Image 1 (cartoon, rainbow, N blue to C red):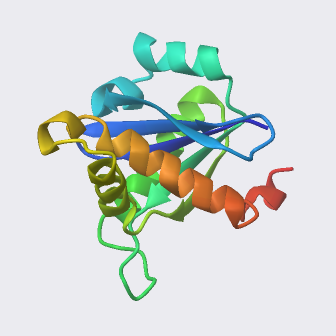
Image 2: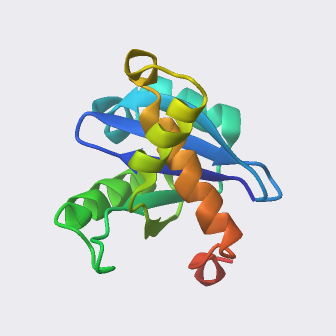
Image 3: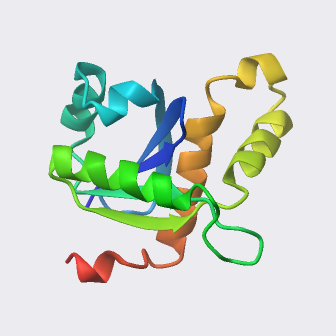
Length: 143
């Protein structure tokens, strides 16, 4: 089963995908939020190319493990994309994924300037990989 992770923000959406065996996550793209939420041609092309059977949306949890203030908005946006695309969605904790992405990119020698526009897709791949490594919680309800 191929999973497409969406790191939804108010400006951009980071996209990552799993391999069909759900072992490896790879960053794919960063798209403007409006292109994803309106199911634009660019986003549809990604869907056609990767053929995901499931969306995984990151939710911003607080350090106490509760859903953060933006979580309800992200749930609504991810659910809307799920309905439009007819692909089910599950949610996972994305806490610290952006800071981990920045750290990883810095360790690879990338400058702040070269990181721009890439952090969101790397963050999506990080929370997708963590979710798969944890046994893909929530997927049993869909299978």
